[in-house]
Image 1 (cartoon, one colour):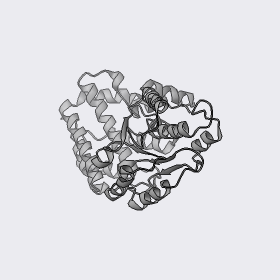
Image 2: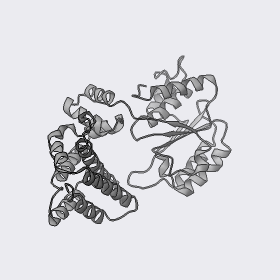
Image 3: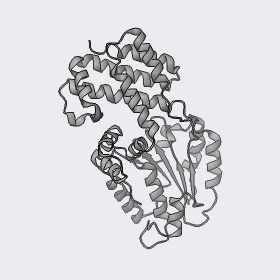
Image 4: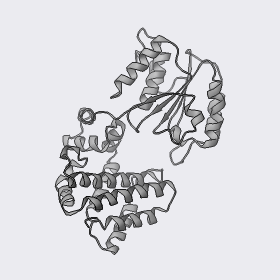
Length: 332
């Protein structure tokens, strides 16, 4: 199983598994799309493999793990469209992992997006963390640990994943047949996340949303109040068909963040190699030359505030109207 990036981390994990049994619980932390989930799958294959050099990728156990059909590997993912993973899902998992392994020496429980666990669900998990069955390997996969209870994180062995080299991500996209100009942009937008980059180029509607959001962002600085409000309505209308009501708005805000961050970088004389939206470099140069660094910094602060309002469930319309009115003042 080839996983791009964080090879040193997996090598250390491999050596630890050769030296002795796994820890009862792990917490894989890092940005989305950098291989945390794939590493959890790799680890399950490593410990359940029946081949001579695990994980061989060829034995029945490895093939079952990779196809997510191994009876000793339980996965709990957040249901698309739901904001959290609740206590009922965790209780169901707790009951399942008490059973002895069916085929291998361990039972794996992989909890994706662990930061989405409700406080009640995390509390329910504590007893299993405090008194784990001898055959259990629990892997919590999370983007950050702030949403997790300290009593949960303190009982896990923490592995921190970092972003992948941007050129390596671009090379991966080129191998997938992505045109060079789009591969370069997607690799930079993803900030070293192969998963996000593949998602961006693989789903045309996500790329189209990014193009539309940036097209609207270009007209915001210096616009009139009525134009800013019209732009807010247009941004609110951008959709990809996701069943997660916040996913598309998050993508819009991500696009706006990268746009004004690029402009700020150029306005203070930063290296153009740091620019994310390289396919719109000329437009960014114009924005940077006509805007003060202070106004661009205010724009970024306004977008961060919009993210905060999104997490606080402020209505998207009000959130975007306030944001676009602030962005219309860029330039002063």
